[in-house]
Image 1 (cartoon, rainbow over the protein chains, first blue to last red):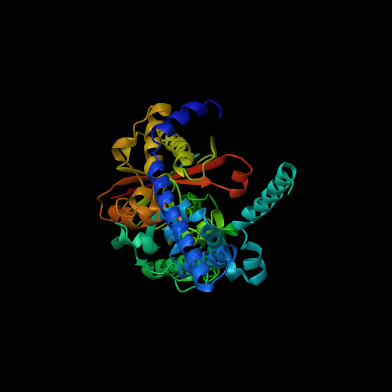
Image 2: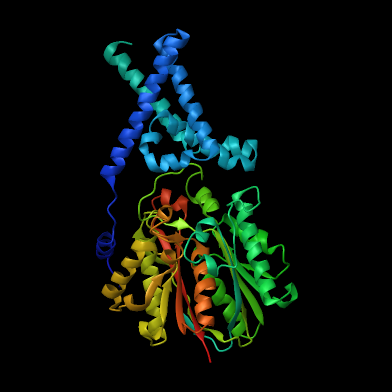
Length: 150
Length: 331
């Protein structure tokens, strides 16, 4: 840095020209759109219970698979990224976000072939979710065993 | 390091711009535009190489030159191993030198070409560059279909290919002087605010250029930075005044904010970026204004963030650089 301006002074200039992010608005949009996904999932689940005459547990699995399918299909059709840009965590946090992260990576790297492209990269974004999902599931399972006895 | 040149001129330039750039205010100044980001290719990477190839072909066509007329080409882009430059230039059989200064690559190429021409080593040289929004997103950020939300300070990599032919024959537009920038580190770590990363590099180069040549900002009709964006532009003006006591606000603009209509094209956030961003602006509208003598002398300061995702993940700072070149109309 030599005789140049100190970091702190430069940070002041940067922050003086920092735009304010519309956090409240983003949170509200995510809350509403995420809620809509939740309501849609619940309706699907109820529908599967009554239509196929299956248990709620089975219907929930069906519902998750349906949401994954819809998100992946919409990603492949090329407009789900625009929805994600708008809804942000409203679509990223539900299982739709997980499906979307895998499908978008799959589409992006298929040109490099089935092994070095698709196979190596499809978990590029979802890999962390799986790793830390498994680790935390194991940890909370252990806690449950210790506290509640299984 | 500042040079002044005696015998380097702009013969002509060519610009090919992508769909987002074609929606912007400079559409009529581009030689060609295209609608589909794949540009008839199978991948983003080959699309970018094809766009750059098209721009070189257009330049040869416009100037009536053949491959034997070109003594050397300097080309660089953002792709790893400067893929687009290699795969496009291969089609022409020119002597090739690959270069990299991120988004300051265009001016780096022009400085090198000008120095070879002024030194009498070559007669004609091309400086070329390209970038592609999708290939950059894929390499530096997330899969293109992911659509990850970005803050307002983020910039949008421009899509296109642009090249300029410099010559030792007087054409009326002279490469007057240039300043080679230094690598600057202002301890910035936010890859979504490249304007803040690059503004000190632009300021350093502008200051050195003006000091070395004993000039004032008013000696130029226009001072242009490459791709600082809406917020980086304000930071530069403020920083320039505070650090060096120089007021550039009267005749200063940023190419990143000129390439798009920032009001209607909200997807570009703070403006354009990428090596082709400032090249598209300068080789189209600015060159046109110089040719028609509505501008007499322009200082173009291309700004580059020497951004490596790996180093950012390892919590290292993002470095930046800016190279300046001055274009002048002579009588």
